[in-house]
Image (tube, rainbow, N blue to C red; front, side):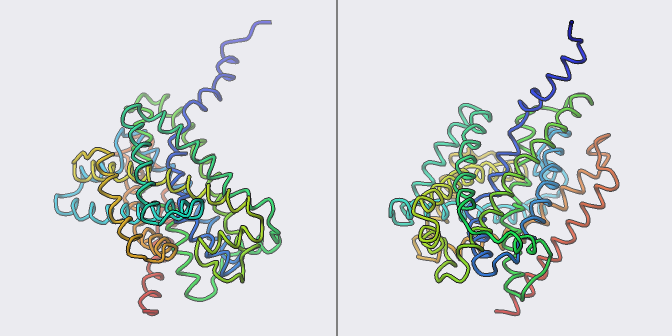
Length: 414
């Protein structure tokens, strides 16, 4: 019996969709960077399962926002920074670039610090030297992207993402998680001002502004200029699958970190630092789990600092219309992180504060993105439907309210 053309096409469709996956997994690295480790371990060690709901909500927001960013790049053939650069006046564009660049710098500091901590845990290397090594390896990864193109870069990042997942999920299988308490943690609530501050840190670590800017460029660079309506529909369908798979994985890793900390580290002295948490994990779950955790942290630092440099170049190119080679940018932006490490600043606290700063930058990326995807003049027939715009406005409003609460509480505590 012969197989009809429609049947063959139907069977081939899933394979074609799988070949289109990749950009979201690169963007997802931003959601499992060392800042996430610091924020999630701190939340679990201090407050148990209380803030599980924050990670679930943040991951749902991330799925929504990252799809919108990729959709913008696919439909318009331009990145979010490029579209903003075309619409803002010179002064406004430069000011906007300054805040976006500060967000990227905060991200980079967190990523280099995390990698340096991992090298210290694994090999006892001084933190400044570890930071330099992380930077050098990131330069090598970016060199592959510059010379070989995006697909080999995606393959390396995907490999590191796999290491990250194993590193942070391994502890979950040997931790005495109280699943009833974990389920109770899905109920939204706070326990005083410190938990609001920590929730903002977790949100900033999960919904990353630089990933919002970057994903539109990743989708554009991977899929090329806009095509006809049929091709666009296929790419958007593949992108939905790409985003869901990538961010479900990233969300699982983040929640696993909090659950491990809540079940094994709560009440243990010294677990408010990554080093202390690593020591406690090794003591409670075994040295092998401690080593795997440190390897996951190292992979997180290496992958995220490479992706962060890519994002910074995208932001600068779109808003300043200035193209700086990725390798040059990596060298320059490594300096602040190494200085922070050399000054002896508490690395875990620096990581948490960097995530709070990132949380403040989310509305500056999210609100323009949603305005552009809701504009028929920009998106044509792919413009957001009314319900999508309502969801987007609600999400953006909640993020802004959380950030206002963060600023007020921080001032009152000062």
